[in-house]
Image (spheres, rainbow, N blue to C red):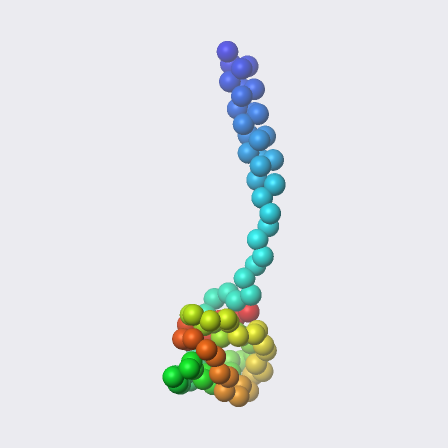
Length: 100
């Protein structure tokens, strides 16, 4: 009886391990956590969407991306230390600025 339980347990464990290997890997999201406070944001809404003006007061360059609630996210770009980004227009509502 013990051998039978051990064999069933081993087979179940093997099938779980093999099954987990068959799951396709998911693509990592482009954006991760919210950008730090040293990336200043100035968001202005219009009837069609919003403008966002970004400034990097961090001690180093940052790769950032604007995330939109109900529209496509902005592209990931690097903003150098002490630099500002020209205002960008997005359709939808502002969600956050994220590091990418």
